[in-house]
Length: 70
View 1 (cartoon, one colour):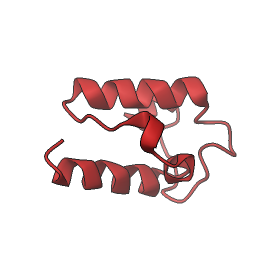
View 2 (tube, helix red, strand yellow):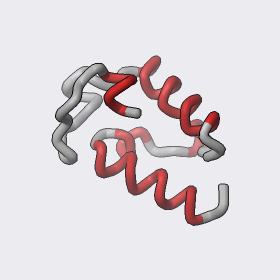
View 3 (cartoon, rainbow, N blue to C red):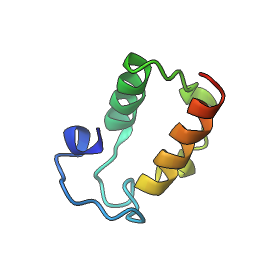
View 4 (cartoon, rainbow, N blue to C red):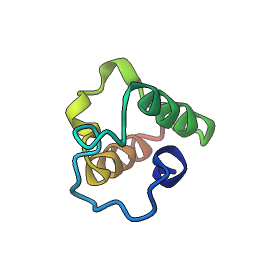
């Protein structure tokens, strides 16, 4: 999903996606839209943006909400 959104194939798990410019506000909205389309409803307004800084952080967030049955 990050490949489709950022256009980058090899993103290091700890790369700061926001600082690097790979993940901007529109890309974050696209990410959450795609997650919702996959059946995972994560309330974007309640998420600390720092959790979206790395691929690892995004993965952890997805795992957290998938575990809640969201």
